Image (cartoon, rainbow, N blue to C red; front, side):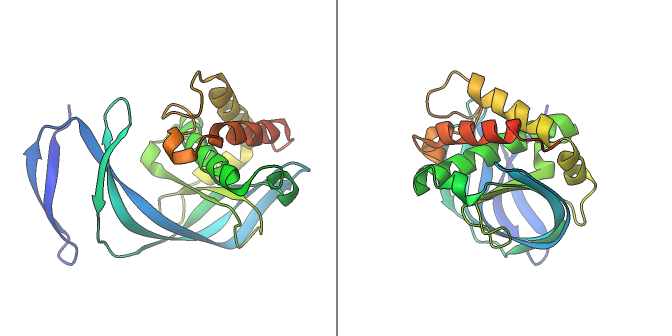
Length: 224
């Protein structure tokens, strides 16, 4: 069983964390302001409804706040400010592109929530197929990605240079997208929960419905 510690002070320059043991019913996670720049696309499979890609990317991430997440229920029970330097990562990624004509079927706020829902569930399901830890992957949605000019969900490796997980995800994209759709469509929640697309407060009232439709289109497309 792991031990819990509270970080009282973080000395970034000296790479030291000053901690004390605690016993609480939550863990913390950071909200990141992420930007992604595609450096090179290695492979693509476009269809009428979606396109999947694999390539080399640069990630820039800045922690903005931390959240307190309750164990088991994964509900957000608090937050606070955080001040850390921006992090940069040169790695590889898989990304799912939604054509603009598909995106126009939904109001922009609903589309944003749907993309966030797809990012949340896709990163969870991908870990099962890749047999990796959830912390090995990051996921980030963009309503209009600079590289594609369209709504896009990135799943990237949190290791410099990548270790092959995104390449494998590209190979089995159809299977993973189908499993993600099944998970969301079969979940009994009404508007989202931590077990599928994420809490309704995060994805919005229409987020689950839009995510379900996007995943349905992706699962039906011949993307591998």
